Length: 476
Ligand SMILES: [Zn+2]
Image (tube, rainbow, N blue to C red):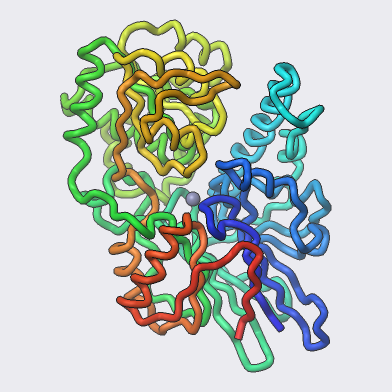
């Protein structure tokens, strides 16, 4: 019998990996497809799962369908390939372009971490090894196959799929999967991450167009629940953002913004430009210190078809971000290090967004102890990450093995999320043309998934369950 098995993003927000096995009447394994193949991030308990083999050997998996280019959805692909996977990886052209920078970067970070831990002997494992190298990540890119939004792809006699827009980040899609079974066709919908509503006041600063595809028909839905237990603030964040930046500059401090390199960084630089041009904040130097974010800006520029009206207007007025005066894009480690010497107020945007690695670590190690500075979070912080520790205003945080005191001001603005919140999700789910027989919630901390589950049962009367790690569910 056909089944789905949740191999990640069940009970947590990272490691998205859902196996579809078409089964066959003899009880043998059928065609096997992974929808997403993400990296576990955050607490060690989850990260260690990156090292454990999935229940199905990688070489027995026939294909991967990738919803979008965030690491928690694509970051395990090089490991899958390293373990013997040789099938096609289907994704939209912008997703493939983004993976072209994200995956090798992830390999680099893992090599760097392994090297650092070996030098400092701070790992329990001797020697510490990378999960995969940049070169291995690079090699995995050969298996990617571009699929346009709306194009139907047949993977096997019993399984075909098409992408429809999820409006989460550049190139992001949901996967509508058709499964031919003995009793007829079953429609499965894997949402990946679901973007915000088409309302720029409620969801400000959107770089790509908003609103997930409406009018879906599905028998079984596997749906994200990241924001299942909280609503985004409805007020315009710009006055508070402007006040925070201005106050920091006035006391001679700098603003450090941990931001996801893809989408969030681009969104934030567009917002800063707008605030400066309209005189709401002083013209401060802005350092975008993430080679990946810089390459991502170039990919954004290539895929103009994905832009929101807001972004197009900004580009018409001010041209490409890469040429904006006062904005410095630090590509090399030397340029990054030079930012350490900047003593005058500035804004530093760097990744990773949850402070799990990357150049942001150096900036925070240097600037967290000074109360003049501001650390501004504009994205979700998963429990167990350094970002979560700092955001919860702990006394100190461990960076490079040392406890760094947190004396800087810490603030968080929640409006910049690229995930729909419960009212937005309900609004979208109400557009479904048919009530799915089964819905499984993934990609949420237990409390978020449970609360959204209850809300959907109450408001929609749907049959909803929270997916469990490694749980197998039959496609009926
Ligand atoms: Zn995502």
